[in-house]
Length: 346
Image (cartoon, rainbow, N blue to C red; front, side, top):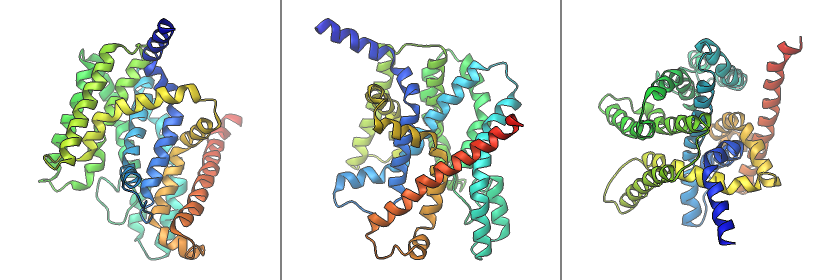
């Protein structure tokens, strides 16, 4: 029995990177729920631990970008001879139609209500508003994601030639920290959401390389992941003890591979359960869920008043709006999928 357990443990270890790929949708679903919980700004838990977990929900975006980097890295390595124009076309077609279908009408409504000028609506549609720090414009995530897409082919090319791929991936944390420090005197603090996520994306590319080369997870890989997590845990302890200040995003960057690896190993045996199927359904629609959730977060007081939810407890109001959030995302996902399929059917 001991030998059998040891063999099973070895098999789980060897297939650990593949587990992350297999459970990608479930992980995206979990990350999306965490972000939605974080965005419920007017709801508070009565206990400290759940409230701390809620307050850390913005790290769900790091999970998104890790898994996005993994997919992009694997795709670019697999299709290394593909024209870069084709790569950009496929990626932007996945993002921009959904973004325009949702943000366009929303921006127009804000213009008609006199809340933003038409110029801000135009900036929203270009997805450049974040980089130019346009007041009252939309969320930062899509502009940042598009830049990661633009940079991905060049980074993957450099990554492929580097003999120290794990070291290069880890060094992006130092690069990110340097850019973060530079953003302060340069008065570019609005770009920090992007800067903080550079390591998450780079670590995702490393995962993509593991998958492309069918690299089995070795003990040295576990040592690498554990070393990053140990540094992250140590910094987190020093931060909690107020003996050191570092932005929590860097702590999470260091813990990210360990946490995602652990979650995927736990999720993989349960993938056929109803819970995991539900998480996978959310994960495949996470982009649509996120965009609608941003609007709900921005318009929460207005929606509560106009929908007659003011008399409900705050958790119930969020429950109603978030149920609509999920249903709307499923409809939007289907609509965009049909638009993509139509040219092929004609």
